[in-house]
Image (cartoon, rainbow, N blue to C red; front, side):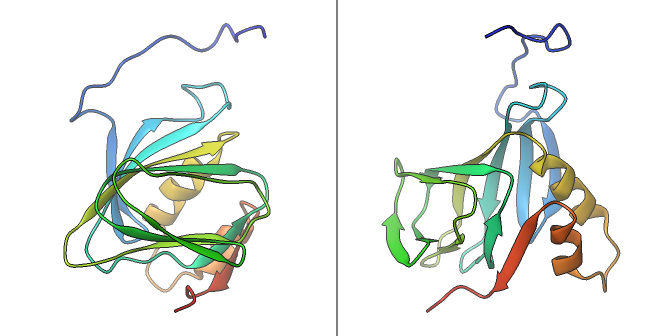
Length: 151
């Protein structure tokens, strides 16, 4: 595979990266679309206790989740699994998925999407005005929000 002439090696330390509050969590963008020439995005996501994503489908990205700290319930398709530090989950594009933080402690994950592009949605959603329609914002990035997670 031939590498792009536009990408360069780089390193980020623990407290480096683009930090923002988005989608109800603290997000550090570790690998942007530009930095990886569109190959992947990588985010470190810190979630408060009882945080939950909606159930959603990425139609253009595969999603990989690695649990760093905390306890999660991960949903994909019709399945539900517990995730603890060291757990890894892979959701191919087109798979309904989401997660919820369990217990009273906050939690942290690495969230990777392949190919890149999800970073643009995260940045846009962070900048969107209150009262925006998340479903319409997501649809522009070929993400479908199905509703809340099952119980």
